[in-house]
Length: 110
Length: 114
Image (cartoon, rainbow over all chains, first blue to last red; front, top):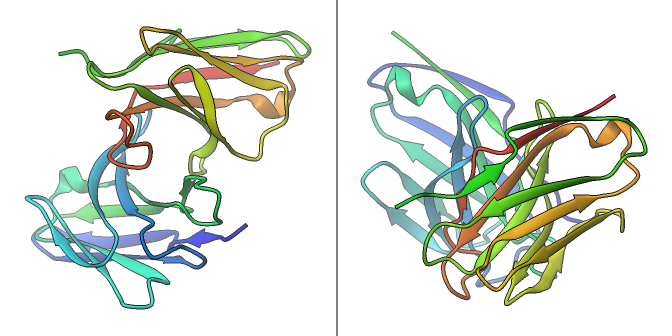
């Protein structure tokens, strides 16, 4: 089964842009890539989703290169409240099985 | 509009016992997925229900079973509990027929097996 890996942790300061990358192999052309945010003792919360090139919404951007072996979540101008764990999710491994990445703990400081 | 709700919030069971967790999806959603999240790890996909049938299943033993009711609510059953089953169990719902699209998660049920 394909693995979906992310950096364990990242540190940033308020107002900076943060880019978190997820490595995922063995996903098909139309398989979606989704990113979630999770705070302690809460369920994950949807951030953004896409399957090719670039997607942007009011809180983030998602960049997917042509080979689709990775994706990057971009958070513009982070604040203290963005401190959380961020997960990518794919349909990696075939059989339409939803797979979460290993998660990245983002810490934002003043 | 209530989001995804789960019950109970916390549960303590003994090894070998059986447990049933419940989930009510967000209004208008017909697809329910269950995940297991061990402490410090990402959620692991258990299975997904759509139209009262199990549509996809992750790498979990048959001790894990589920059910979806006509009102789209769902139950997760775990038999012969092991210490390793201690985790946060998350339920997620999504829009009609869109199993892999934006999922709305509930707060989870924290299961502790002693």
